[in-house]
Length: 133
Image 1 (cartoon, one colour):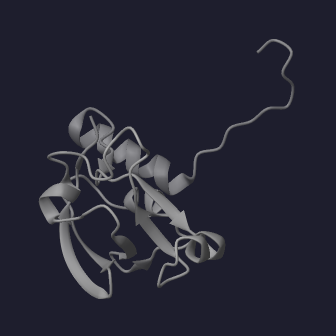
Image 2 (cartoon, rainbow, N blue to C red; image 1 turned 90 degrees about the vertical axis):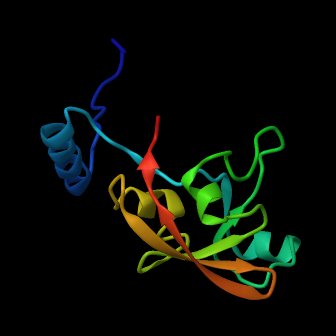
């Protein structure tokens, strides 16, 4: 924008290093994905939906698209609408560590353990990350 002044953009250095390595090894930037739509849980959402936890990622449809994308890594791993992802790999999913940010710490092809709350049952699902297309 010609009228813009002092606008800067920053890319975290670890993200930039990962992208550079991806280009060097594959010729392009490979972005991993799981294939779920989700809402980050906070105290207000937990209260309004009467959830058993106050943090995590609630797998939820946006009303138009499914909560779990067909043939996605999440579908293959057994994720379902209404599941709450409480941990992804070694990281607890919360407002300081949103699911989308955690996923970007991994590479396409990585197998990641996810801790899921389904109703009152805690499940450990293994998801193999695929490339976002």
